Image 1: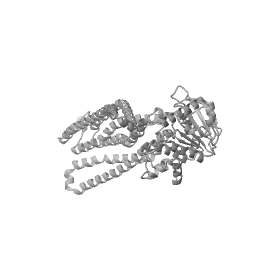
Image 2 (image 1 turned 45 degrees about the horizontal axis):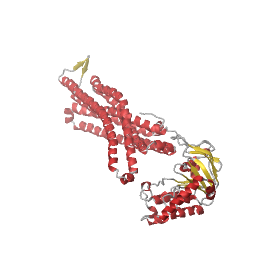
Image 3 (image 1 turned 180 degrees about the vertical axis):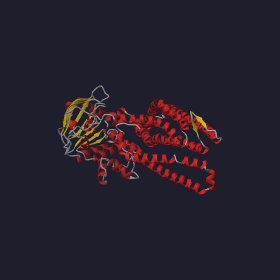
Image 4 (image 1 turned 90 degrees about the vertical axis):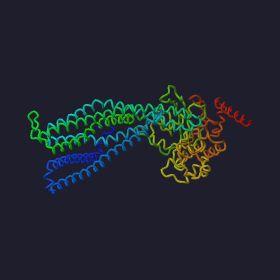
Length: 596
């Protein structure tokens, strides 16, 4: 077996299933080894049995009884062992999924989706296979071999048994030599699968871009290179695996030839009345005993094959478990502290106190020394040039990354001391990328609720001015948006994302550039709804157009990661050069468009 801190606990959890399965398997092995004895009795006593059919039928009935016991036993070990293996597979996958939800955002910046999917599919299935078929092979390779060898020594001949055991020693030595090499090749194979998954996932996600730029042929050629590498690695692994299996089959075939050759010679001499002597030991081998011995060898073939297969299966499982363990060992940097403060009755006051932030992979700060206070219930706009840190500023409120203590406070409570779950429950967020799930529009809007009411969903849709569009769809609110909202327009996705955030009715609402894809009239409706229906609740609106936020209570102006100014529209026109420049350029743009 294989042992690891993430897998050991499942031995105890499923010990009853494994115990029942192994017991049934051993019982089947014991019963199975009795069949050749009956065959030997029939051959050696064929003359007597032909004259007394009752004795023959007695032997046949015993064989049928033993066969029935084998059937029941095999059903029992299949149900038990495979129940345990699928349970381990399911529990480990659940543990991995829960881990993936706890990991920080930075992990997904560095790890591709295809690689993660490979862990959740290929590697998990490899481990499940090992604990299913691997357990069966391991038990049979040991117990069935021992039982058969004991029967051969007791019922046939010790010297002929020693001849039969020699190949098993060769298989063990050969398996020990190739196991490490098989592990290396399996790891290379899994990494090649990772690359294939990554490439396919990226292309399927960006299929519309590929088609728009007519780059299908280019991507096909690129995929062919990735697929060829995957094929080459798999062929290399298959060659090693097949060579290993072929050598085992060759050893088994040589053994069978030796048994038939030596056994036939012993049986012939015994029948002629001149038994063979080996080191003073007389080999008394009748034809019936030879048939019995051949039956034992036939049973022994499976344990020898299993012994070879368990080597390759164990090497694959060890490699896959190592990959999964590395994933589960990934540090969870972003988590609630001990004695975390659970936020309750949040008013919506937000304080930035000399806040600076740098992404883990960056050398320079994305935000530097930002200090300001947003009072409860204020509507605040955030503007600035592209890349000035607008999204970084609002994302920091969600605690996606660790920050310095006492640099951000919610209702005067340090963000780093807050319980993360309670923090995020009190913030509604419409992200910049407007991600939608492949689900009904109703479920997308009511995502924050396990049982969203139709009235609340419609209210949220009207807030985002998307209700009229939805009811025009053939299935209305039951329309499935498709993966990432592929069946909807950019503006519709954006407004459904706003509706989803509003539906949460959180004390703090963040709209990150969420009206950039809608027309001016729709934007005005949404902004009007924010001012009317979010009264007394804090709302942050990130925008690229000054017109979007000019009527907000306060406006934050960022410039190259620093706070340029913070105040009302009228105050900023007097104090902020950057804001004035943005107003001037957008007014000029409006005049040019009007002239056209």
